[in-house]
Length: 406
Image (cartoon, rainbow, N blue to C red; front, side, top):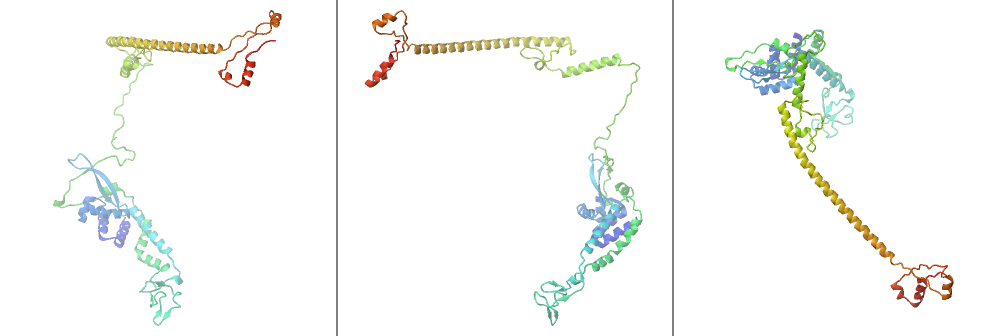
């Protein structure tokens, strides 16, 4: 543990500001501190302290824990913030950052012939030795852009092995401690262990704070549910009986329980019975089956009488409606019969246009064939328009008007 503390202090003093160093040193000394106690030691307000601790938390130099605490006289608990150091996480974060920096330095390796060692102080241009060989003046090499003399610095853009060597020299205090820490055992550090080893903060008389009591909300138990502290059975009763089945008392209690449930679930009469016929939809709803008393049965009979009177009135209304519908159907049938008679008379009128005409001829012919030959029916067609036509048309019409049997 001493090696881990030494490593953390060395890194904080090499790369962080004074306030950050003081916060980490206070946590190393006291193991675990609440935010108001740490702000008192730092002589700053809690808002500025949270900003500093937020940055250190991102860098994994401290860990934040929130706990519900109860003040005396206040029934509602409040969440308080605690800080402590998890040494394993902090050492791993330091290793990771050193590895990333070393990887970046090794990745920027530049060959010697490509190093830009000459630069112009006027236009800030940089050139390699091969690029300025053809531009030489009385004062040395000249810039190709502004023709001014160039300055030479060998370590201006040092890279590759040179930069890696300088990095190793600067990180030597870290690289020497890390192998020793890997060989030693660093115990696991969580909030409970840090709080058990915490040193109290001694305040002066003018900066005392009220004592608080932690609230056990079940957060330490992974499967606990807040608000359900005791969900198990309060008591267990076991009855041992020698009979094969339930006793008479149990049967009676079961029957009473079922009757009570049936009374609670029973539907009113206007819902269970038909409003037209008064019959029950289930056809089994009786007062006796539900275990009703005689008074309840009498009240139901009265309601049934009222329902029957209403039913008879509804039946009369339906009979009247049926009679009106029958009368309407009879009137429609009579109207259809009248229409059929009118159509029949029109057809008879059309048939009257045909008349019987007796055949005419010579007397001798009539005498010979009067007994053997019957008179024939000839269609006579009168057309008013034909009489107004020319003479030739009149002769053709007369030929068509009379037909005789010869």
